[in-house]
Image (cartoon, rainbow, N blue to C red):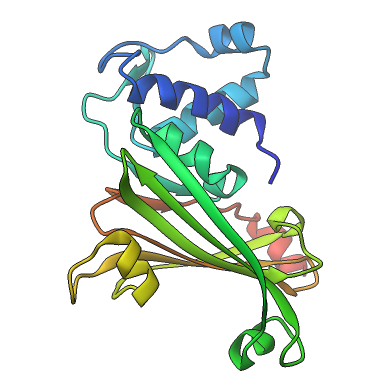
Length: 229
């Protein structure tokens, strides 16, 4: 998906924080300084700082400013993460060497997938396996399916995520090098078009200790607007 300006700005500062270019306790530029330095609006600057805060990278002190957190924990934030490539997401998280590979093929939809995507049995789907390493250590693997006429999730209007600790699929267990019976953190994602049609399905596995927390943010409509429907 196209990367919003506030996600790009937050990512630039996240990389500097992870690489210790901005030391723990150091002060970030003010909102006015961010606006001037990066040519963005104040709304973009504020949303970027809010994203950094939700990721556990900075703390905001009222009437004083924004400071780099003393203790950095990895927090996976949605839906902002869906607007980044895997390369960008992992490089924003770490100053280590990140490598991402993808295997793409067209496969015949089995009965379960055909039902989910409202296809005839045997219709083709695009299957993408994405693997990521950090300093050669496996940190993520995902299986993604979407109709062959759908390029990516940029046309989706809704994202549904289910997060759980589960036994990984055999291929995921092999990649993550888990021990028999060891649980991993799993994220099951479904992307929907405006008409409710499923346009992408993804199952992601991480080492269970990869993230300190998972945060999902959504826009809530005012109660009056909901009552009018």
